[in-house]
Length: 297
Image (cartoon, rainbow, N blue to C red; front, side, top):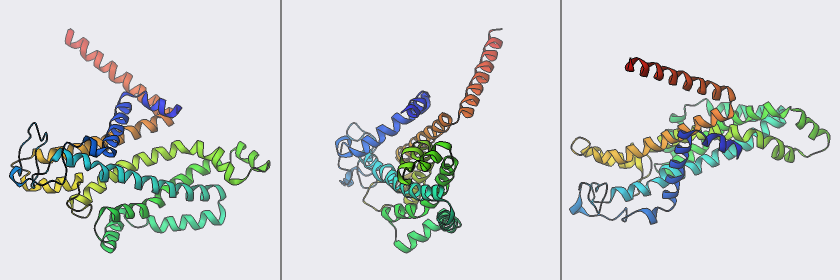
């Protein structure tokens, strides 16, 4: 909670957190917020402009763009977040085992991670899609199979920094079980690092799922997804560019909010970064003040 308070002291971070929370709530309650059925076809409204009834207009099948944008939150953000949680959870378990027990356990797990990380992520994802077939579920499965190795290696490094601390050694000597030591002593100190690496990967995964859907490899019609909405609006991107604006703007806002929040987490965890940030703000304010005095003069 103290970490969250430190993060939310930053206005940009608090605004980003509010945007992400609002987006997720709207996605979860999509049937409540969506003004129309996102799958209802009205060919007479094909490529209709924005109106009081359809605030963002209608797509190539006359479907409500706003409703599809709201329902698109689920695959574009919520399902990606679920895949991220599973990947981080698996990586955390294996990372704790490797960083705490070391020895043979660490060697075996790290060699497996080396094999998984030796292949480019996009190439492996495309290979898995080619084997399993197109679809959102297969892309999320590919994320899970590929991301856990990276999370395992990063979390293992964080655990090893604290595994030799005096309080951990004292707990071992007094006979506390390894599971309790990890839960009581190592999880609290490594959780902030896990939050940082997870948040930094979240934005990348949102961009990847949107990119694959834009290429026709992700979620399939008639389901709504932001990348696929961009793909559907390509036919009129020059005559009616506003139809690409809504899903594109949604992707930009969500990814930027995730990145701003991730930066705030890093600053909150590293006092040196916080000090450097304050110094930059002071220099910027001083320069603005000098410019203001010159204008007055």
